[in-house]
Image (cartoon, rainbow, N blue to C red; front, side):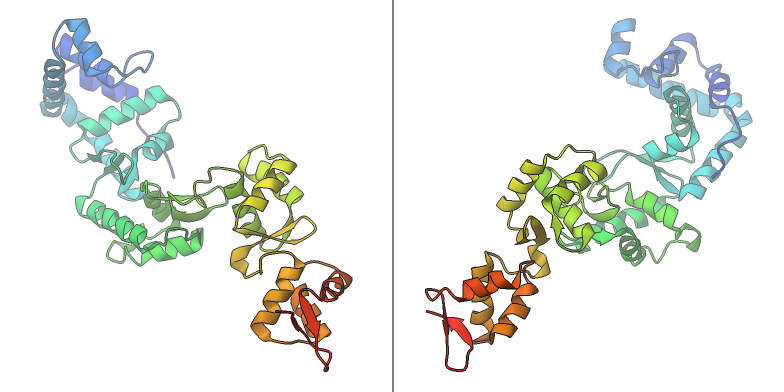
Length: 343
């Protein structure tokens, strides 16, 4: 989208002329409007003027009110209207970080924009809390609807559920049916989603609950799970290690990756170095265990049936299956040539 047409620093400087010297200095310090863009705390400003934190807060509040009642503010109404329309185009409610970054890349200019948002009476800021990031809105009713929708969306997600971006947006749309159609754009919906601290996406673009290890992976095992899941079929641990480094930028040693896969029940070794996800339905254990599991489930089977079923579970040679069947300690053959477990 197009950026703003006015120059934030020049506008703010004109607004600040409405203030007496000390009040102006307090505002410049508090909002990082100086040359170094550093924002001062109430305490540090108080030490400079030898006054309390509360007194600094009072001066800040006084300065904002003076500016809003000044002729300078009235003359600049056009820029506040433009900024309001800018926020409307971004969705009516926007995460602060994204809003400022979309207008300016440098920290100094962002500080001036932030101050204009504070001064402008059309803008309302909801501060960061346990559920949401800092955000600004120009429509309180819309803001309430979006917040409620995000909370319902989170509650509807299972702990380890992972959704492709398209499915997440579709699910979100179910909760924002009441908002204007102009806001039901993918770009805006993703912007609203980004406000939530409880919902997030992983580097593969998949969404879910932020606390899920499939969204915020914490180690090689979690990265491996995402890689294999994305691959969609058994993959060698060497390729898993390479993919972790390529996709997540995490150095994954081949040996370490193999060891981590062995230890985690989410993975099943289905061939020489080949791993699949247990959630795909693969039987666990060595070939002998797989044969046992098949026979216990289906009863006596012919050699061909056993081979066919085992090959769906393991990437091994037929001879490996036959060798295991010859082990009379575990398997027996009936008069009809069918195999069953010995016990």
